[in-house]
Length: 354
Image 1: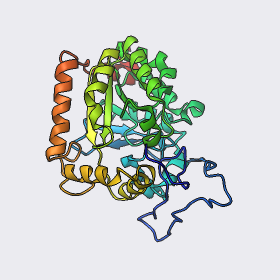
Image 2 (image 1 turned 180 degrees about the horizontal axis):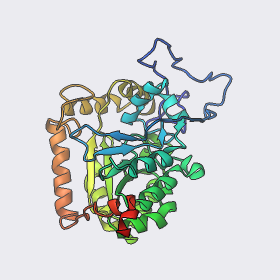
Image 3 (image 1 turned 120 degrees about the horizontal axis):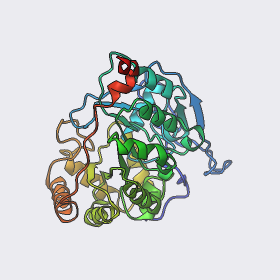
Image 4 (image 1 turned 180 degrees about the vertical axis):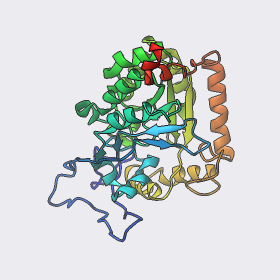
C-alpha cells in the first residue's frame, strides 16, 4: 500500500465525520486533536435503542429478499465503502467515523421477531439478517442478540439468510446445523479480497481473510449452504482477483460467488474519496475514475437493474470474468431451496390437536 500521512487513523475506516445531511450541525473534519490525543484511542459507544418493529420490507428489485432485519445500526467493522453509512444520518449521526463508533443496539430484536413470526397475519417469507449492518460485528460476541434471534427462527421453523464478514458465526453452528437440516438457512460470507493487507485497509475490524476462508470451509463441511459475496468489486483494487478467489472458495465448498460493483452514494463518496487520497494517494484518481466508468461518469448509479453491476467496458470485463469463473469452478454447484412448509405448523401448534 502507498505511504500514509501521519494523520491516518489506524484501525478505523473513515478518517472524517462529514456533516449529517438532515441538520445544520457541522462536524469537525479532524475529530482528534492530533497534538494531544492518541490517534488510535477513539472509543466505540454502544447505545440502546427501542424500535417498535424489527423487520424491514425490501422494495428494491435488485435485492433477492423480501424482508431484512438488523439487530445493530452502525458497524464497528468500519468498511470504508459500506452503503449503510448513509443510513446513520437518520439516527442523527455522521456517515463517517460515527458510523463505526456510535453503534445502536436493539436488545429487543428477538422479542419483536417472535411477535411477528407468531402473528396470524404473517405469511412466511425468507428474512435476511444483516441487510444493512453486520449481525456478527464484534459486540455480538458479548450481547448474543443474533444468537437469540436464530433461536426464534428455529423455534418457529422459519427460513433465514445471513451475510457476514465475521467468523463469529461459527459460535452458532449448533443452531445453524438444525436449521440447515430442514432447509431453513442460507449463509453468505463476504470476502472482497484474498490479500490480508488490502483487507486491513478496506475493512479494518473484520475477521482476517484466513479466518473467513476457514469459516466457509467449516460451514460447508457442516452441511450448511454457504456462498461468498465478493462485494463490492472496486475496480483498480480487487477486480484482478476474481478468478483466483472463486476457485479458492469453490474448493472450500461454496456453491456460488456473487458480486456487486461499488457504488458511492452521498456521504459514502465523501468518506471514500477522503480515505483513498490519504491511504493510497498514488492510485486514488485511477480507482475513482474506474468506478465512474461503471456508473455513467458518476461515483453512483440509481438505475434499477444495473446499479449493482454497472455498465460500460470495465463493468463488462468484470461481468465476463465472473461468468468464466463460474463456468470453470462452479458449473455444477447449486443451493437447496428454502422449506416454506414447516412454519405454519410451529406457529399454530394447537392445530395439531384436531
